[in-house]
Length: 263
Image (cartoon, rainbow, N blue to C red; front, side, top):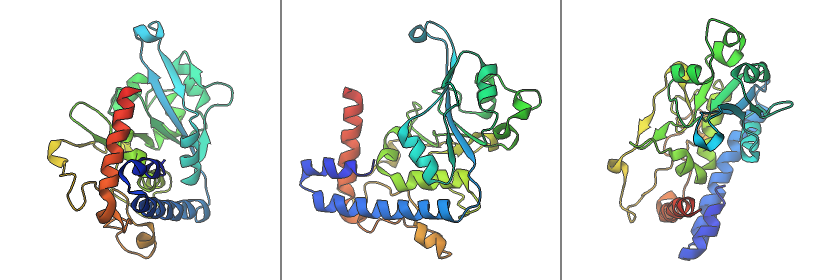
């Protein structure tokens, strides 16, 4: 998805800068992918799920869903996991049926629109840590339940749908931390946080904004994979062109947001 930058850069006569940024993001992404797929011996099963609460939009009928989005499959596989989207169904009318379907899942990413805590997750999916079926689910017992709301605004707007779109390497970094934490010992996270271990959300407000013409108007949230592999901290990001062309990223993210509103 980072290559969308190259498309939007044409509107600002900034194609060369966007190509440089995209190449750097891709290189960092591929470094994380290589580490996750060649330096690990296991491939945990990961599911992306959501609870659809009763409302007028679904005839006041709750459901529990498994995502089969292609980009999530790619990200999961590139992070060294096995993507799970159900063997026979992706939508379940009872939490019991959902629990049966995910018996083999090691890691679950909850994408529900509501319920930002582990207790809320258990309530939404009608699970318990001490009683069946929750007591037999690996992602419950191993405290491997995550959400994509690590970066939010005061109205619970998720940066996952904004900043993450153009930062593939930072997204994969989050997923590698989620699936194979032993690889890099990364403590920081951007969007994907572990609610079973009480990792908190970071609130973004207008105070986090910078001028569009600032040296780096957009924070590069990716750590350098090569630096981490060499024993460094990975700090400072990987994008050598960030200072030169981050304005392109700012404008592109603005267009992403505008198109999301329009369509």
